Length: 309
Length: 320
Image (cartoon, rainbow over all chains, first blue to last red; front, side, top):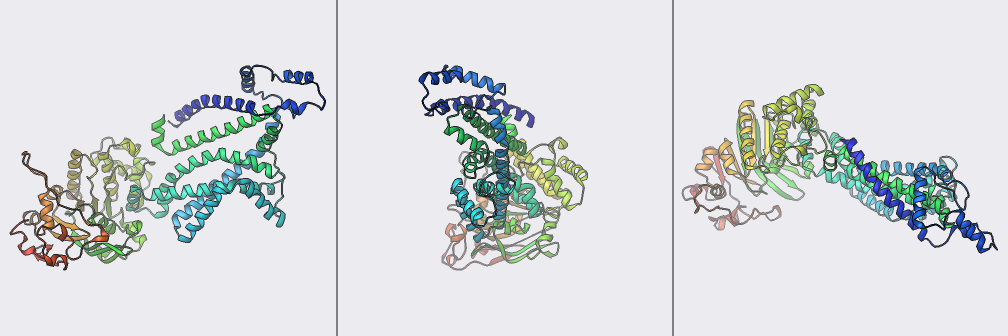
């Protein structure tokens, strides 16, 4: 049943990825500016320019350009970076591990810490703790990542000297970026977990679980948690995209290599193939995240499994 | 087996339940009747020791089960009774099972917890009990999820859960309210059979007077968090002495003639924050006089029944 569901969901990804590829391709062309300008030496003639444009195939019909691009993608051929003059695949392969490490750790951080905090605040329900949680959640969901990053750098790196200011050398350089990206996630996950647990506690069947003589701990971990996990999984799946989006600026602030830094640099230089590849990777990650979230939900909730497959 | 004496329950400063008494022996059924909001379910929650769950506490009285007062029983000991010796059946079978778990394990839990059985033994017991409750293909049902079953089936599963550890007392809180009429009759008959076969003490909470007439040995009529009349079922139906009981009985639909109109009781049950002074029923009572608005009535005992009404002595002579 769950395999069938996964397969159906995978099929649905085909039209979605197609539309996304069109959007990504078009958006890049709508950007003002031109990568060729970055390649031309001062004093080049219009003929030099035309030659370069032809060399990269930028003079062809847009539709043809799209199909050439997508066709190459299918063969794993991401093309050549125009300004950086290297295979795009190499650039992506070089930067992707950094982004995956950072994103993965931030995801892990926000889900574990968020769920723990949410559970504690739902079970304890102390007024002071509640107020603290509310403030924390408000901060977490409103403070922009790049600003938090600067504050953390100022305090922990500049004043205390605990962590490096920037770069990607060893685990110490990961702490602040993970905290920055994970912070908003922790707050969000904590809030969702708390609300979901409190909602689950009010369900009729909980009375009957108590009436069976089960202990509160058993009820919490065996019955309430799975219920609370359903919305949390949804949020986390959506969060994958958010984390990667947030990583774009945070990587930049911390001077870390990664898909985000690569994207920002390529955008500045209008390096179309690189921008397209980066955006495509991000879109793919978001789609995969949503897919994993849906499949995880279906595996937990028999009602979803039946409705959709 | 189970006897409740002068039970009072409070949530913070409000006291929605006070002076509730009844008792039930093995092989007997006691009916607790009254409109919605009269405190019937609260009584059930109190006996189950589940008041803290909804933020309430017992303020007075005793709940004596098998010679032991439950009102100051520690939680750990209470857990052994819950599901073990006192089973609960709740109102709405549609929402009383965990929708994410299969039927089997939800029932197995009880035998594993209270009878110390392992998974296989517990499952065998579950299948056996489901079978005695006339559930077709019990082994198959165990692998199903709650949303794949009808309301009547689910209520049988809930009953199976309540019975799994062979309890002495069963508390059924409006077990048929959410079910189709045809299924209602089946469930009531099932409960009635169980009382006789297993020598259970059944506390049947309902607002359906006809169900009470069919199944109960004794009745407690509740109004606004108070017991207003109690006694053997024959006495209550033949010679009701409290005007509220009389009104409830008058509400039972009877006859198919076109002239037979459905009767109701004017007004609604007061909410706990505006329980009237004096007799709680006086604003809706046809017989009320000045004293009813000021003095709460005492129980007037007659034989083994009693009614809390200032005019209980004369009530059955001239029904309202």
